[in-house]
Image 1 (tube, rainbow, N blue to C red):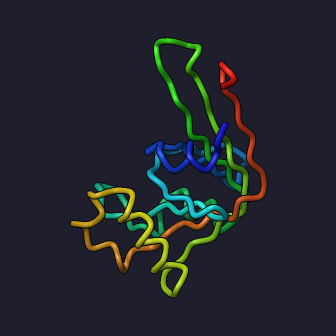
Image 2 (image 1 turned 30 degrees about the horizontal axis):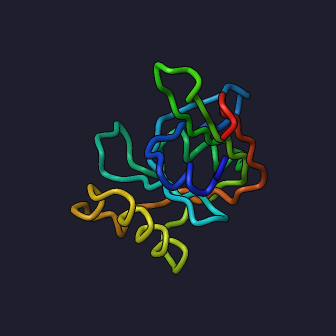
Length: 138
């Protein structure tokens, strides 16, 4: 499996963080990948709290170890596949890495081209381990 291509072409992932009490917290996210890092915007889609108060952010601040899974599903199960990324996360609020992340996210998702996300935080995951699986080897 070409992992870079898989991560570049798929559009939805699930981010897993750990609560202070040890409970997993999983949320669907959109993301961009630059070959070393995964970036997740904390954008203006409806949320109950400010970006920096989101449970995923608080969890990362307490324990930066995260996992992200991107999966491919079809009714033809011979085409099933997934990539799981384990890494260390931090929240970027400004700077060159933040700006580069925003540019990558806008390149991948046209919706972000219309949103004012420049001032919004971005989760950066430094990729430590990648595991993949596919039903049919090509």
